[in-house]
Image (cartoon, rainbow, N blue to C red):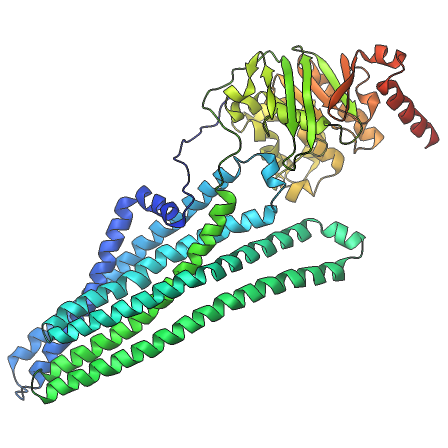
Length: 589
């Protein structure tokens, strides 16, 4: 059985800035060159203002035929052309770099998400988790792009303006520095104060996204119970809470922008009055006044963009922080690179205790020994612990105490993926993807040859109906296999198990939801599938496991009966009681 390649990565950071820096370090040259181009473009934009000053100074000399006019003109045009070249190259490189980094970011978040145990997914909306990954990618793109196009250029403008103004008036340059420091402190203050509002909005938005996905997934139930208006009202209330959070975040931004605009308007007016006063005193030239005016208004507009970008960045960082808080939690299950070799299939539960996350006990000091090649039926009332037993065998969660062995090896001492490659599972309802039938069958063996996939389909009695479809094995089957019948979906699940060819087979109510004719076909396929394997089968229909080597009866997490089916039917125990109850119910129906 081929093993999928596993790329070892450093753990994801749980703080937004460190998390984003990870992807800068992954492409250092791309980001460095992009930074150089952006800084170069912004520097040229400042230098253009100096070129304009030289041009105006020459034009005010009164000599209209002066040959000195063309040098500043050429410098002015050359800087404009160079600025545009830098911007276009930076935009091209930024597109490739930012998009690739955000793609990596989403893949890494998904990879970390799938490492959580199953109990994690029962505590969170699937739609909300998907929305968080998507929104984190969009937020990261906004931050990287905002940093390159809205934050760095105004900062370069400011530094360039200070240098240029020093050639005109040291005092004017000092005043500009003081004004920008005040603006920076004001923006920082508002950014810190407003972050809680932005995080609240991000949280509410993700929750609403999860609600919508949950509703769409259960649209049949909504229709069946005539609940469209009721669910509309429920969703309206949830969206109302999100809208209020969004308004609080938005209004806060508008207040910050208003203060920023008022302050910078006074700054621009003051600098211009100062420049005119110096010109009147013949302290500076007309070109200097033009340059100061142009730089002042450039700083004004640039700082407005900078303020909006910083506040927006604060909001996006809040979105990423909320995503990291939910998704980038430490994995509850430890893992190891050690591979499990193909086992014979013996299974042992030794003194196993397990409880749910809310503290309810499922198993207390459970002992179970299943020899290799034995077929074991697990029966009992709902809530007895049957499904939890097979979840623990697959290590979808860890035991609280005790140990689970496969071929006398602790399943915690091998990698989770290598363990699960040795176990084929046929659930009550096959979980299918909206992909082709071929891809769904080959999901456990993606490198399988075509003839192996076709052979597995024949063994599961689904080759005939597949080839009758318009596109055969290339047919897309819809979300969760919605375009197929229940029996067809279940046979595809069996074909998966045949192709996987694992030494341990788990059957979780594999025929309970099928009609009699379909069940008969699938039971025939199951008989072939079980041959030569260790089988653990959960069953509510006791007739499906009466031919097994052994049956255990669970009650409140304890094995209350264990033995050969024929012997259990002779005793007056729990299994005989369940058998008689089902027989009576079947006779009555």
